[in-house]
Length: 193
Image (cartoon, rainbow, N blue to C red; front, side, top):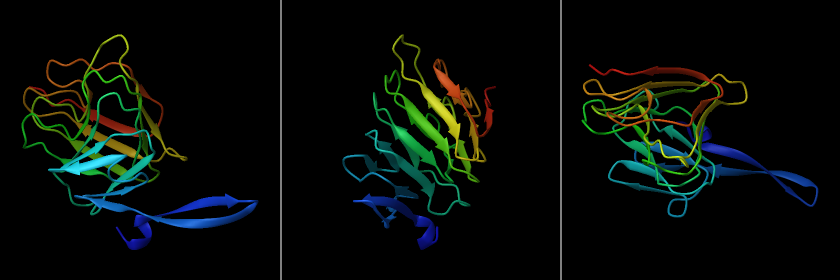
């Protein structure tokens, strides 16, 4: 991303006066993360960006046209607020690895917004859903996928090719429940054989 694309202009009002503060994105592996701080809001270790708080976070590939094997996870019971703004993850050759995974049986409500004009691709390995949300317990958290302001963001989610999972939902022998699609363009494919 260009330096301008890595920055976010935030409107701050102080005593009636308005001014803009430039907030830079931080690099975490192959991703640029805007919003939140490394440590209290997210971690990055061994190729995994893990969301650990409800602070709104925007994630984009630093090189959106190049797929990465880095992946995204939401920790158990975290009510995450994530905007995908050009994520391109391909772990289809890594069996048992999900491109984007919400911890199994998590009670946290997760909202994923597809940034306007962005294309977000999630390709998972065998036994996993493209965007994986396993769990069917009574108090299971809700996953909401929505479009941005104009609803022009797109999500392409592919489950693993052999013994696969859903495009969006449960992995192999997993159940995905409490999933709500409110907008954006989605292509979800299960490649199970």
